[in-house]
Image (tube, rainbow, N blue to C red; front, side, top):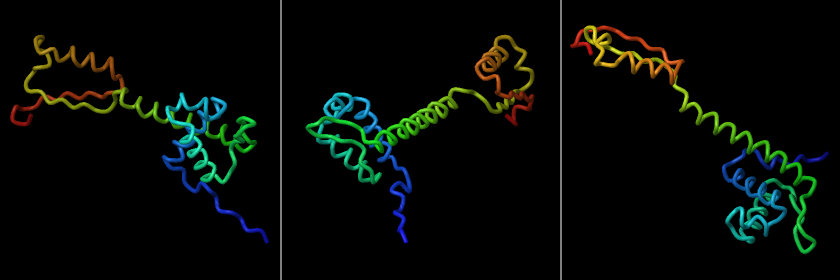
Length: 149
């Protein structure tokens, strides 16, 4: 009977994502020394963080030493998966930030008398500009008594 080892990544943390970003840079630079400048951290710190990632994943990601730097087979697979994950995170960030730039919803305006028709109030001008910026905004204007405003 073989015992199955528990999954090393039961959950992906912010720390794991940070380590994967470092790994991506190291892989793309072709080694620790070349990644120092890109990452702005020293070779020993990179080495420690790569060791942390390998330990966390339970995989050897790269060969390093006097013979040079190269990704292992598992390292190449983790690199491809890391690219997909980091791309998905960037897409998520871009989409969520885009939500703040897209006006939508409902605007209810309560006005007394017929202020909307007075030219010097420029209400219709302001509403037209709002509709240009946010065509999905639903505008409701209600004429109500001053004490209800």
